[in-house]
Length: 188
Image 1: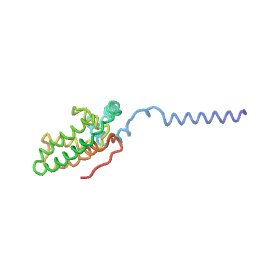
Image 2: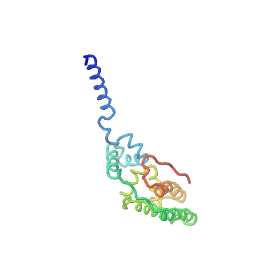
Image 3: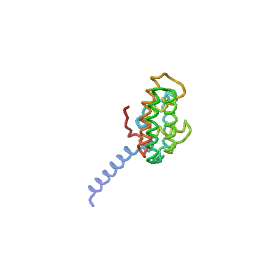
């Protein structure tokens, strides 16, 4: 083998190693910064505000959620349960005309029940955290429904909360997998 060929091979190996370091360097193994903003959307901003703008604290919390719930795979709903939940949601929407407060409270209970049946945790904090990892773009509607069910807001706020929460409901009853970053909105 000639000296020139050996030098060319060494240069190629050095360039390949340098490229690997750049693309797979420090911090690439964890989700952070921009990745968390994209993954969590409005939930990122909510957590950031709760931490007083401390991005490092917010990102630590969100990374912990990903570690805790990122591997979670929800259980599928049996066909009859799916149909029952869909009919129940339709009833909630119909009930809204006559009794908005009762409809919002029922929407809150229904969302939580579907999440639990799919295997998400039962406690409020844990449930929201787990849902935020897999359905971050739909979580605001559930939060608004929960707030409205506690008596916060007027009729229009309750209506908007139920409309917004429908996207999470549909994601929970129709997709056997969590939607994560690949979520689609739903119109009402």
